[in-house]
Image 1 (cartoon, one colour):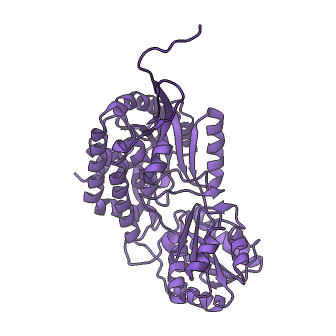
Image 2 (tube, rainbow, N blue to C red):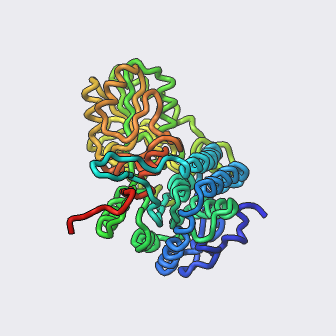
Image 3 (cartoon, rainbow, N blue to C red):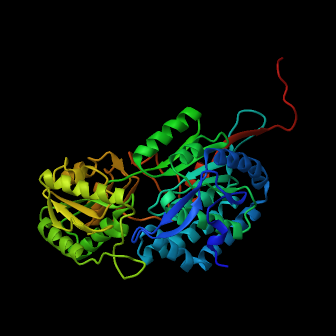
Length: 485
């Protein structure tokens, strides 16, 4: 039996065991063809609340386990991701419309996340504090308890595992709600991996569903932390709910990321980086390069070369042919991408490459003659669109880059000295010099500012420990203190 044998999970959720969801099933479709790939169970609000209670009960024993036991489960999970990488890659390609290298990257990073998380149980979890009293004073980290994880469709495995793995490693239980369009890659895969890795029952609950399920996962009384990756609109709503219920939200939201191309930049390499940043996975990445700021001395050559690059990229079904771009995830998103491009043209923008689609396959698109009010410049598109604008001075480039409500990722290509001066003045959670905007590692903090979220909440030991534990003050005296009462 393969890891993802459909007889295990068809029509089911995973809550302590594989069982039918109370809200029917969710059909999983291949975006390139519309064909049915399978069906998972749909979790009702009652399913979520029961799972939350079970998670809270199981979590206490898990938190009390020796660190080596929790670390061993995470190491086994990492090895299983490596052993089943090809099967997982195939599912990601079919379910998300990704090209095979992107599917392979998700499987690799999932393994990396587990191996990195395996070090967390034995990482220092506190410090000795100064005190004026006759006692020892300590601050120690304790598991938060139950963590809710809500993941999107675009990188469903990575954007689930990067919260699930550290949360489990640090002694928590997890309620996982994947995007209903990618419930296998972002949900079933994790449930099966940790099942095979020997994670005790009741610690990881797979709860596919729509908005009602997502609301229940946030509102479940036992859930103390909510890790959400998705749109800014949905993130605001979740943040408001968490504030009312006194929960901690970790929000990784949208982006409209700027790439600044300085006059000394190698044009061929800059265009290659720009095409990757804007067109990788059809631009359906929160870190996608959404705004190209190009110095006036090289603007025209850059625009011409980027348009030629876009025109030369093959688009099609990545499961059946060798292409650079696959399909847009669904018809609603396709219509949104196309409407932003067409509205931009109506506002005076000009299409120099792409701007068309056949079925779900949108051509890589390059736009110019834009203003800061142009829809394609002002909005997060989440499609393969590269809006290009010229600048004259460093100060102008900084103002344009910071002229967005988002602040997730930024890129500066060219002279390092100038790039360093600019980087110090950019409002962004991540800045990459002489790289494009799309980059992530299990060992590095990840997050944004402004409309892109509430800071780095995952990635690396420091961010993960802070996110998925609570800080507790502990004092110790050699004998009971004397008091004046």
